[in-house]
Image (tube, rainbow, N blue to C red; front, top):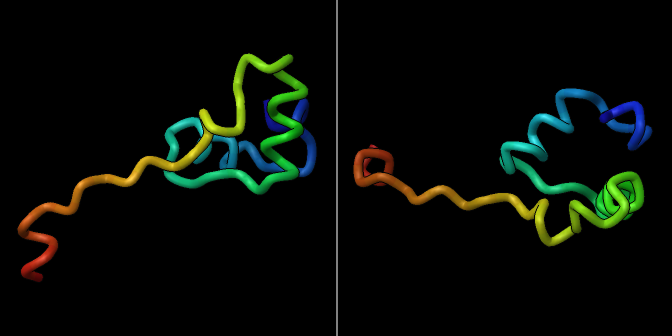
Length: 58
């Protein structure tokens, strides 16, 4: 998939897939084009994980 998108590493695609980071506008547009709209930019927004109480008190 990284090769089809262009100018992005396989590791970056993995981070997008698991939504640990979001793409740049340019990459999001290329992903939409490569997938013929099956994956939209809004589908790539990173997910904010809830903060656990143990993490807050540390």
